[in-house]
Length: 172
Image 1: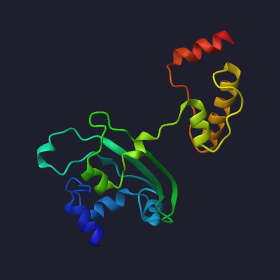
Image 2: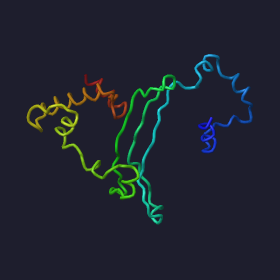
Image 3: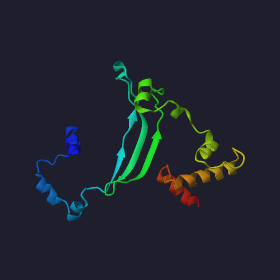
Image 4: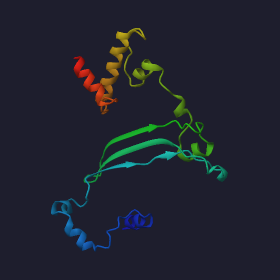
């Protein structure tokens, strides 16, 4: 009950447009009631952003610096999947000492960037094979990288318009 009270204080409880709880319950199917929750899964996100202790800097634009998400099974309570990445702020690329202490995010998280294709391959624990910047070698290593990404759950898709797909189909 404490969770519901907190949710109410934070304004997170959904309003039912004056309908009584009993009326709302009759609108849900029997199977939804048996489950106990309307959803079986939730994606929980908790962004962290740039921050400053100095109240005079409160006017500065906050930028997201950490993007974590977990996929929660509400039936079992298990975390099914997780995603986590740090994002380099652009407006204020150097994190304040206050922000680093508050979030535990160090500036070094942003200074570690892969060194091209070889760096990306090695960061994933794969071995770069061949001479860098050889077209066929880079293509083969990029294929290894794409396969690893797909195995790790990345959904690979065309990032351009449908026109590109039509042109490729015609060319084939």
